[in-house]
Length: 412
Ligand SMILES: Cc1ncc(COP(=O)(O)O)c(C=O)c1O
Image (cartoon, rainbow, N blue to C red; front, side, top):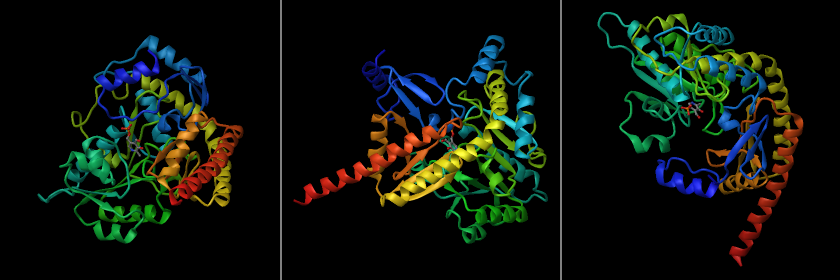
């Protein structure tokens, strides 16, 4: 089916949840995608942080084909060879003890919230009410299911669906005194995205995260980190929290874990895991043999790439800073490794740049209205960064000229 026919068909039979760009992709290889007319696009978005190894990575293809021909699904009623191996690798790189596998980011986050409530019950003696309140950060994003929505600090995502899970309060971003004020004896968990992704690529401050660790340790609440977008190598380390010298009680991961297959995970300590018993939580699909076999391979390929992510990320960031010095419309450059952003002084400008990039066949996106977000595959090279920087330089200059002209026209 061609793009026009597909657009019509989808408009009739799908829930209208997505406002898709008018491109029909048919093939991907490395850092490139090809559309139905054979045009090649440079992918600096990776399917929103999923295709960390690019498209059609040879090692992933081998494991995918081999495992697809052997066994795809058995359910969690039985053993298969890859869950323990994947959990062993994830616990080793995270410094945590145990894993639970699910199918998406939001599902991992829901499980983490359940774990926090269940853990609070284990601490409760003498018939006291268990700690139950959850503190989350303003401007955060944790997913689209009810618990995740309830802890997402952006009203536009929550408001159409209330009433939501009770007991959630929001903290001002990076505000330690607000945390001290709200972290009372009824709080079972403090939730932090180590780097806010949807919220505009905003790393939490070291002071805030370190204070959150100390204060939760003292109060008996858990520190839960959402590394669904920033984890698994995106910042040049396995986990973004490893830049901060802070160890969480629970961390959630998903996006790149199975190189494009749906797979999420909750990682936690033995102490917290004691709250869970057979039957309390589960998933039909989560941690199936196909996704887990691929994820084991993803982690194997990732290890030697981490240094490259750090180096190419520093190179990319330096070039973005150079653009900031040159163009007055750039407000700030933020991020770590290959999770980078350029905040502009106008939402219209950011929108126009993303559209112009699509015309030039480079994929990026806009988040938090004014922020250009870059989540390229970890395998990009300097020449790809240079291409994006050249395009940004030209497009920023020409868009500013256009905006100036249209202002003049509207004045005269
Ligand atoms: C930080 C963070 N948490 C949770 C989610 C939800 O993940 P999913 O869309 O896989 O449910 C996302 C998705 O963008 C995310 O960026």
